[in-house]
Image 1: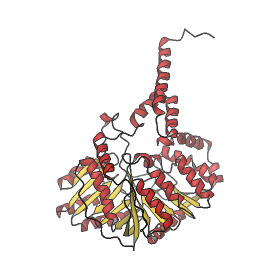
Image 2: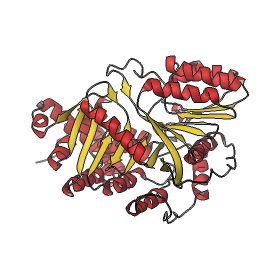
Image 3: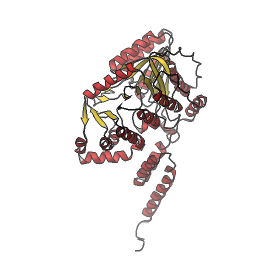
Length: 474
């Protein structure tokens, strides 16, 4: 069959350019470190080379601002290269390999003698943080992904103003994208009263091809006088997150006193240095560790640190389980490695419970996560759909042994793209408190069965399966 020379020449040129773009982009994409990520990009590029190519130019590579990236690299170069033996820590011997793994992945040195108090309501978090700021004598350092100019944000801003008027050094880091409304007025107000404010990872559209705009600092941290600290999943905004249709968001944070506060202060100073270039002060050594209280290891991750460090940390934590794993997160889009680890845990006789919100504010991410439900349910994982509001706490409980509390979700964005922060806690009181919080979540949840899940509509199923194809890009 001969070539159809009646086809307009511009159509031939269009086809030639389309296939040339496909071939070029495939050759570029196959360099990705993770084959599943490369395949997802190839699928998108083959479907629509123009759209796929444009998206890849915008978000295909991890590109931080050169100055910020260079500062983070300085911090990495100055960090210890090896982990201590951890032999003298007051934790069971079988968990010391997890502590060593965590430190090799970029976590800070574990400390003992800490006091942890879990706060699982919005009002208690805000009241507690305001009270600590009002007691500050020397310094207040805040780092938040979301800080909005609403009733909650204004309460924290008022407390910062009062502290600054007493001569307290107040510094505030807020993510430029997550806290966009903050910069319309509250930013100037706080600066005027003496609070040092900086936008983290500023978004500049004209540099979109040089700096990836969706790399965000997702951490939540407050350090007061170097004596107390807050971290977890709470942001500084009303608990409806801007009149969310999903109802109030349900978060969990930890208030810490003890030697771990110095480690959390170090994390703030690192991010402050990355944004401002101000040298990191030499901190006084933390108080002598006591064998009483909680053993805490501060972990942090991000695109300027050890690549994909959270995934092996989560896998290592789950590998320690002998009886039960409980995970809560608003966005669960597990990688193939995490799916396999959950399946292996069940096969070892470990009960695995995932508590996730029934509704979500991110439809595509939500659909991609639900696309893995069938495999999880068939593997024996228990999935619980939490109904009241939007469950936003990010926690893991392993047996009655240790807890993981932080800002990271169970998705690719938290695992590879965001700057995240959290705590690995060995403490029976904290473990018991978190178990009680989880029991409350479970009482408000529907236990999803494989039969119920199989009965969902065909359109939903198709959309979820399609979204899951692109989960490595979410």
